[in-house]
View 1 (cartoon, rainbow, N blue to C red):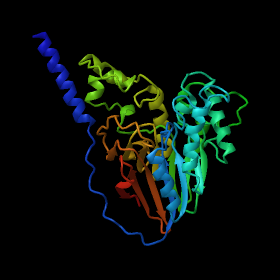
View 2 (tube, rainbow, N blue to C red; view 1 turned 120 degrees about the vertical axis):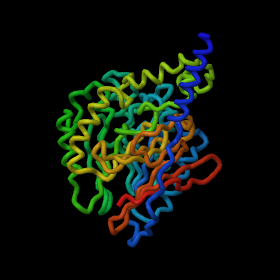
View 3 (cartoon, helix red, strand yellow; view 1 turned 90 degrees about the vertical axis):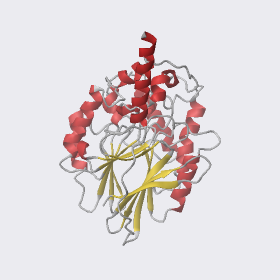
View 4 (tube, rainbow, N blue to C red; view 1 turned 90 degrees about the horizontal axis):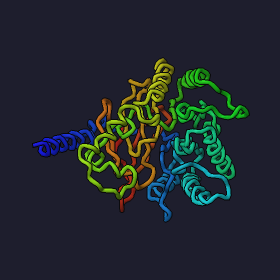
Length: 381
């Protein structure tokens, strides 16, 4: 009887996880509105691309082709986790050559763009939880500068950094890992803002853009999402939890396996939205964004593509574009309130701004063996 009860409980957990782990059907897109003016700016959002395949990742290949073919001013923003698993190691160490390759593949994919922005992610800070993590961010910035690029905000600084693109768009770059890391940068770091209050004052000033500019916050951590960092896991996560350690560990642990997903909802790590430090960061940003809501809050971190309404966090919309390479497709997709579209298929997002001020967002997916294609389209304004 006890065994039968355990089996029933396990099946119930699996059924619930399966239900909550499935993508939520998106509502019909807004009616197609052919632009009445010329395309002015194309912004490409791609994150978590820090371990591209050695023979060329199909997502980055399609990004490069799309940017090259764009007919307007272009900007590419890499939304963090630019080098897996532990950022840029010191020159001459065993892992340096591979870390450099992973970064330069992304650099090459964006060379045709008029502007390229790299945002630091938690993996770029190496995640050892020590002040030395700052050094890895600085090393990545130094290597990017050799190629004519740089990290935004400035390496090891929280931001915000304001980047105006063309005549109609303003990017506001924030290093959210600075908030969650727990250690300040060295005292000799030349950061304009050095405290949380200074950062928040800077964010509030930056989003007060001129009326003709659409504001897009670009950061690594999303305030809301439909992935694991928001507590969504599917039946495989509950039944085969050891796959979190190694993808080939298909060891069934019914009942016991549910402990890890449940612990993640208690705030096990600052990387999750349930952690007090993460919640405090989001609440603080919300308070400063709400009086002047940006058009879009764009982030990575979740290894999928999510598009959500953003009123709850002080923005009009939230775009989570963390599917910038192949190999991350197994993570669950949940059904949070405000979800408009979600997929685990690799890809990126494109935001087109037209000369008359209208804005179109497209989710571009790159399935195996096919060319990239728009999987979702919404006119934001």
